[in-house]
Length: 275
Image (cartoon, rainbow, N blue to C red):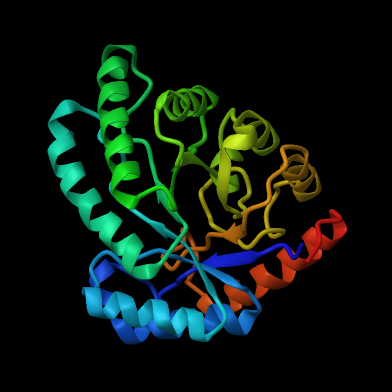
């Protein structure tokens, strides 16, 4: 079976400073950049501000380019406190509609809150309420995937959160760059996720900042990481997450996207993962 590779949409006109800059023409061009690089799937990074009609145009353009609408990123995290729940749920109703109009298979979210003992019980309750609601609203054919950060304890919390959800359409998103920055570690994060892993944010860094470099341009040991993906039986899209507002350098949408596709294809081949 052919292994799918994907990339997120990047603002094609310089540095993105607000979501509103990413207009419909920019969205369409971003998809073309991804297809021209040789990817076959896409994550929509900034789509929540588009109208329903625009979202349908974006989805149609992706399909016309041969791109699978794989995932969309919902940027508001799962509520950290009871006071955040109402606002979060309002945003998630929009996110669910966005997911349906784009025709994606996965909605990626972060978990709000910290591991401070005083607020952990409230975080768990608020996170759980929002995760369950979003999973219900997107429906059984779409997965809500919660993303890791850099701390092992936080990843353990997220895994327990997903395991406790009574709905089957919840899982995990593995961000390699985040895992590389703390005590979590990429290989360990993948093994901890196991069969819960439903999608990826493959990106590299030098172990100091969340640089969102193309895979192979930082210090992550990709041979070990890809072996771990195989070990846990991951069969989803190998999706790259780059940045249109990178730290410490100017954005290079076309160059980064092309390098990411070239590097990822080479790394997958070296790992014996079928393309």
